[in-house]
View: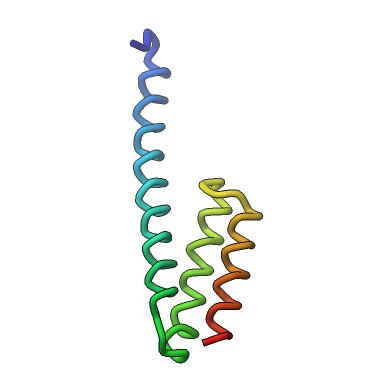
Length: 83
């Protein structure tokens, strides 16, 4: 157990950030799955920018690597254009 007041605060902050990151990451993964299940091109094109925005946000906060975000965005864009 932590002995200092600052260490206790750091533990609380880390837990809060971990839960927020977990929620955002899971929400983004679900959005990607939902986008891949779409068959209507208009719907997919309308939904793609919001998914890309989610991925950019995760990359900015280092939840996922920037290259992974770029690869996912590229693959999703190819998928939507191929519908």
